[in-house]
Image 1: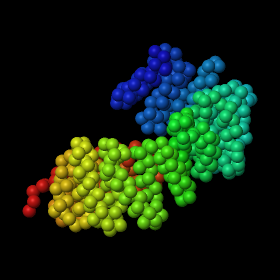
Image 2: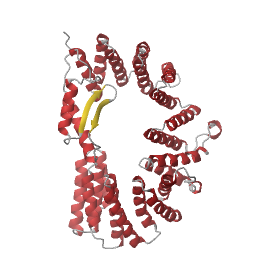
Image 3: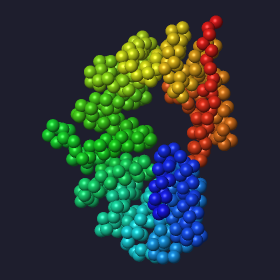
Image 4: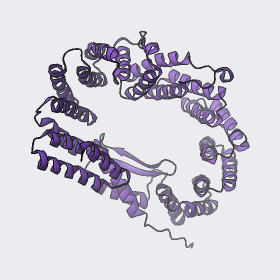
Length: 501
């Protein structure tokens, strides 16, 4: 059995939901390598490295680190095992970086570069692969000055070899230059010289790396590439049709929008939304256009431009109710109508909100989808309950619960509100949390590491909202997810006594 076959079998076991079987296969492969080739053999190192992959897939990063550290520590006996050892060492640095242990990762990468230089030689592809990992770490840590000479060496080495890492190296170089010099063009002067396949790889790698790069540098690098791609993209689709970069352009502008939001740059937020609206409008992609227009309306509301937001929301609602432009896409229309109704309710326009929710419920009835109908009934019931119309609210919430009783968060929220109606107490949407919310918090807190959970409440639309006392590490994130699911499973047994006094 080869190591690759072992890893493939383990991954297949994971895909069908059998993590214990995946770990058993990996452990048996290690035992077989020791039995057949001896402890400390290159075969044992490879099997340990495969086991580390499985631990990573399972989110068990400490166990993965132990396995890959053991693999990298096994002495090499020939050139193939030395090459593999250098790869294991680099993978150990990658894992430390993923775990946020930056200083340790940097030390491992620097040691790995020394080993690669001795093994592969200067200006080699093998050395460039190790330098790439260090340059990426330096960029993430804000040290673009130290990263710049590295990325120039990397790009030069890989350009002549046309290695698979060439496109990512050019993306990394652009991000480093943007971090170092701002909007000093060009950053992508080699883009037109790449093959179409390499151009697509560059786009994919930039979209990925920009998410961990300094935000301003990410925005500027994305902007230059966006402008280059726009030269290929014609709004006159009747003449030019779909360009090879159409999907990438949308992804770039979406990522720019996220960066702008992170930077709280209102001008850039508005510009990226305007671009997306114009883009989808020119192509008559109505569902995508309506979604972007909703984001524009929310942005205007957040800026305090309430009259403009009202006009936008009203126009979107009319188009959704008309239905001709989006067909029977209730998955889009119903939640948007409910959100628009909640906006008008927040502006004390209860008559408009009530009318929109009634129309949403009528549309949901026609769609014959239990989940969409349940969610829409729930939205109307909550609106009625929150505005002291409890008698009317009960029937809508009860019907929603009948439709969504097996839907986890939704069912739990509805039980909260039905319970509050029965007892005449505030629902979980008020600052006064009720007994059921308190019980859920108690159970989650009991299952978490001490001091991690700050507070917890249940919101009727957003689901469970919680605050943490500190950023969780990967292990704590797993604890948190399991704790919430276990607590919900326990509390789902709570029954609503529907008997009325």
